[in-house]
Structures are given as structure tokens and as C-alpha cells.
Amino acid sequence: MEIVVDEATVFATTGGRDRDPGRPDIVLLHGAGMDHGVWTLQARYLARRSGNVLALDLPGHGRSGGAPAERIEDLADWVIRVLDARGVAHAAIAGHSMGALVALAAAARHPARVRGIVLLGAAQAMPVHPDLLGAARAGDPAAVEFVLSWGFGRRAQLGGARVPGLWMLGGGARLLSQPGAAAALGADLAACAAYTSGPEHAARVSCRALVVAGAQDRMAPPKGARALAAAIAGARYVEIAECGHMMTIEQPDATLDAMAGAL
Image (cartoon, rainbow, N blue to C red; front, side):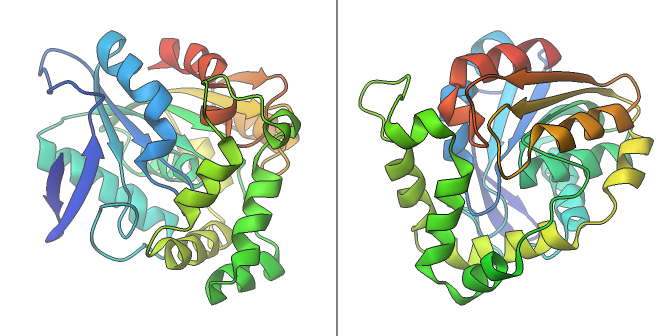
């Protein structure tokens, strides 16, 4: 489906179901350089069992118009404007990686609009190595190779997909090689590197919160995820075994099991 926000088209998937005003609303946010496709294995289930789903393409990503945002806080405010455009009073927000930072910022900046957050593959700060940032800014294919090699866990590097015929690394490479994906990846990594409000935002969260980490995550290691959970009052922490950073693809069932109750 398409929504118009800030005079630009926003694309979202709904998990195959129209919005029912009597059901709770759930927003799914992807990570750097990605799009709604990373939620394919969760969106349909959540739409049937948990509530109304909006798996968004962030500005300048996938099939959404506009330009990638320069600040995490700007994306958080944009998500609230998406809710306004859909007539949604409040929603739960699940975000992966950069999307988790956006969810965290949205909960802190707009507490009346966010009824719960699920933060997957995140920490209070997510610094980016200067070489990776430079390669991404320059559109160097090495940036995609680095993200894939560090983003997927050991089993995913060898195959091990739970879905027959799914090649996880190949799918990731295809996603990060779409038109415009290189520019989006560079902008996203810069936004993550510049985000310094994580501790402040974590302290301001007043809704239910769940932090989910992959035990083999090298991009947002469990140590940082545990610290994030400890910084949010009442937050729960779940760690998924044999899983890297790309948990929605690597361990879709375990990720869904963790998310479903929280949403």
C-alpha cells in the first residue's frame, strides 16, 4: 500500500490484511540500507494473530520516495507522521538495527503515541567504523560485502536457511544492490554513527519494552543489547542462540516467538 507523508509516497506492506480499527496497530522498521522485505517472514503472521501491521520502507528506501534522513530523531518524528496519515492514535513499534534506534527515539519523544517497543539487534550507541562509512558513502561494493559478512551469523554463512530455497547472503546482497540502496546505506550508517541520544532516550521510555539480541551478533553484540535493556525501566531481554545480526531472516521463528507476546 502507499501513503503520502511530507508530500512524498511512503510504501508499506500490511501482511495481507486491511486495517481493522478494533485491533492494535504494529509498525515494523527495517535497518540500514534495507527495506520492508526483511520482515516478510513475520509480517503476515503478526497481521493475522497480533494486530494491524505496517512494515514500512523508510524515506528513500525500497519503494518509498523522498531522501534518506540524516538523523535518527528525524526518522522517529516521521514515523509519528505516518501514524497521523493512517489515523492511528498509538502503535507498538518493532525496529531492527537502525530501525530499533528509531523506535527507541520515537518512544522517548512521543510517549503518548507509542504503546510498546521491540528493539532487535541494537545498543544505546551504534558506532560505525570510518572505513565502512567511507566505503558506503562512496558506493563502494566493499561496503555491502562487509555488512553481509558481519551481519549474518556462522550458520547463515554456510546456508542453514529455515525456508527451503532461501539463500540468505544472496538475498541480502540483492537487497543492498537495488537502485538507490548504496546512497541509502551511506546515509543510514552516518545517521547511526551520529546518534548520541541513546542513553537519554532509554531513560525516558515509559512504555513496555523488549530487547532482542543474536548470540553471534558482531554488529550489535549482546553486551550492548543487555546494557540497553538495563537502561530501560522494566525492559525484558531475550537472546537468540546461533543467530547473528540479521535475526528476522536467520531465525525467523525464534524472532517471532520473542516479538509476538510483546506486540
